Image 1 (tube, rainbow, N blue to C red):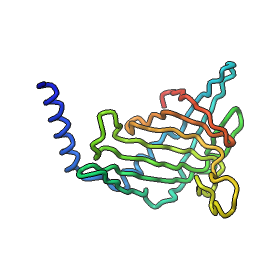
Image 2: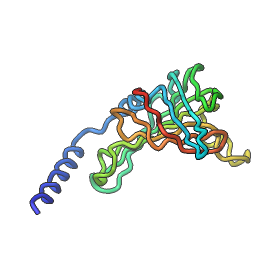
Image 3: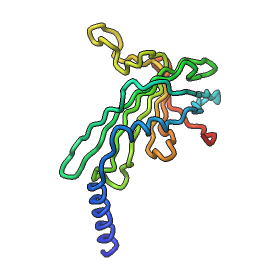
Image 4: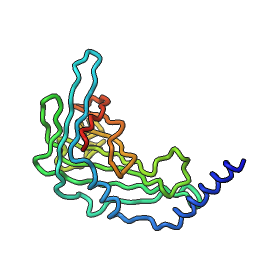
Length: 195
């Protein structure tokens, strides 16, 4: 009983401390975008043993948004989830390599949520950052095609990208990676070389 009471009090004080902490501004979320690993090596495992390696390399060129878009979703008194979005164009030397084919990596799209101000359970990560490293979208207008549905065709503009999630911004470790290659999606596993 005492252990449960102590845990409840600790969670309550933790929530109160976060409630009085000032929420960070857009510059904080841009700093998270800037921490994305500029190099990555993933492997797609195939049942027949002919595994496929996927690598990427990028350098930031210029942000599309002057600062990230930030909005708060209030779920009740003292329960706020902060959502943020960012886009940055890559320089011309950036690439996504799939099976020996090198494609131009054109931009990153970040969609994240800061859960530190929420009453979420202990299993809710403080951050959930979804990262899309996009190939062949030189204007970085996606994910929905400009002019859709009036122009017809597919809704999505991105036929090729590497997507993963980050739950710990201190190490920016990619998790749950998915490669979309020419509209086909397949899971990939990070081969971490200590980056």
